[in-house]
Image (tube, rainbow, N blue to C red; front, side, top):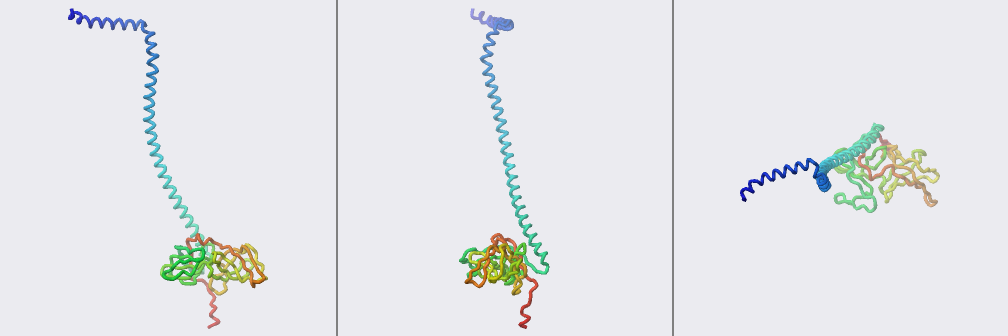
Length: 290
């Protein structure tokens, strides 16, 4: 009996399957299919959403990596451009300064020059205390330039910058360096005159690093804003080098002369390139002695 029932089982299952297909085709299970669809559809949509999200996340991660690579490339390019911009600005500033100095050279063809770079600056407030070898530096306001006796520099030579502005005079020299005593050094004295009124006096430096014009006669009328230039008195400097501009004038009855406060024509702290005038037309005042 068991063998016979086992032989009929496949046929029974086949008949059931056929009946099931016939019933499905007749729409008997339509309500059930609708119910199953309502249950399964949200799950299917959720699974599809998860799959889409996972796909989007993968794409987003790839996009983020690409954006990071692009950002790194742009940052590197930006850094390079910034550095190049700095170099171009420096070249332009140096070129402008050299052009101004060249203009001065062209306007004064009778002078002989040697160009130099400023390599050191002196202290601006007393006392200085800078040492040169074993000797205490006597100058409060000074520059050191990278030319010396090997290049033909000698003590007393005037030093100028662009715009025909007098910086100072050579005070000490070594084979490759020179000390420039600035015009605002307390020990500096320069024969000067006012460009407009031709009033003469002596330009001296102050311990604070300023400039004053002294020895102005009491009856001379000095106006603020006048330009102060070098005079040819003494024959030590060329005439017409710019020194500064009159800011104010003071006079006390107890003094024999007027004194004018002079604003320097340049900022000595910003000097980078200068010209040493090695030769210019001088008046030989020793002819009378001979």
